[in-house]
Image 1 (cartoon, rainbow, N blue to C red):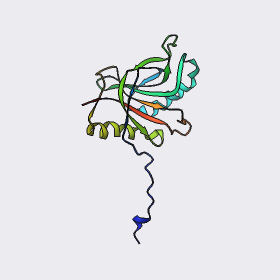
Image 2: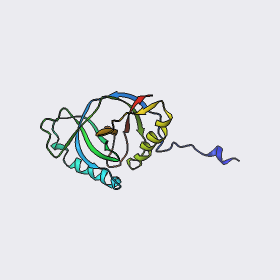
Image 3: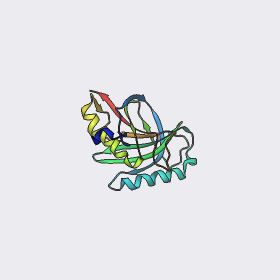
Length: 173
């Protein structure tokens, strides 16, 4: 008897599907930000916790999705921003940073599995899919959106899973 015939094939919890393409923006995001460095894997969850503690202080919130933005400053400098969409930046307390996600075409990757494995999906998008696609990364050289994470209504922060997408700005060519 061949064991391979009796093996149940289970989907990989972190399997990445081919992206869908969306035109979106502009989106006004208000939130908290931190420079990205070698401690990012610890700093980003702490940033989200700080933001959750002061959600009610963000005026003019719209929508139910939350956003994690990776913003390229210059050279190898990046910062991460945890935030939400707002109607406008009027009356935004100084505690919060504003950022506008530009109108753009995005390759959207669904992240399957737990949030602590999100780097696998981001790595796949940049290192495997993008070089083998007919698209280029659309990012300005400085103070520009590198990519963003979208956390939908079904994301459960207690479990760290569900309804997470990576939005990569792209152009044809």
